[in-house]
Image (cartoon, rainbow, N blue to C red):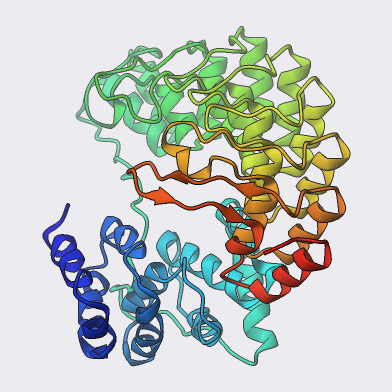
Length: 462
């Protein structure tokens, strides 16, 4: 636990009257986190925000003079609700967004969810940044506002996501090293030269960025599709599998076909299959070409792989199948297709989430409608296994009410959800006790008044 967090918790343990009588002191507790702008610290601070902190933090937002600190404050407050946060979140949409600046993009996605339920769809924005940019622009236009321009210097106000370093092809290196560098950089002419100079097309270089990868793997990982196409034609091993090390990263165990499926590149996938690529090879985490294609929303790729015989019931490390991954990421058309080839609308992985719970939690209205039509259980109860123990007893309706989704709540009620469901007393993963709660007890945040009215009109008791 960082030292600031220990000090922060100690401050919060003071008597309540001391806390609420000193607004400046409350604000001071958050300034090191806002100024430090460290992701893990911000995430930890979210759980430490007290009700009496919200108004002072909103006031602090308007005193901050740079977007980086405002973004950190929006991140800290994303789980809170206060009517005055609407204006704050609307203002934050003016933040300039540098290319690849994921922190700012995701904070904008959070802000949109406060402004209108229509835009309360974080996972859709997470998977489609063009949609996010379009909706931000639309909201700004409707409110007569414009985004601030990026600063004219190279110094950005925000922290961009790290970008891979593209190596230059050094002609003094060995043919094998030049082949790897050229494939990674997407320099097809240099690839051909290295091969003509005697490079092994299937060479595997240990260590560094290439640890365990072939040239074909590097080309596919970096989307150098013309290079990948050429290497396949020249006889590259289409079933090379990067070996798992002591601390496997997200690329260990994946094959060229996995990467073609991940990118949704149909011509390369067909060529790999024609050359003998194995269809169902899992990576270190159990992900197959089909599961990554489904999770990425590539419907045509999913259809191709299924038609070739891909196992639609293959599971990744947490028990989820391609269908579950499509639902998790909001890909309705993929989920709809997978339901036609043997998937169950109620199947869940080891986390205990049913597909309808995921749709309800993420405001996937189209998906929820599809799942209900296909027989999803609107009163399924989360078993709360392991780290999910705090969710034990939750139904899809609980997730919708908790998140403040009026339309989703209405859909579930109309579909037969039990408005008098009681979540029994339990505990969090850390042992903190949780009381018995009814659905109305969960309606405390965004759009709570509208949701409570829906519940009571449907016969919910207090």
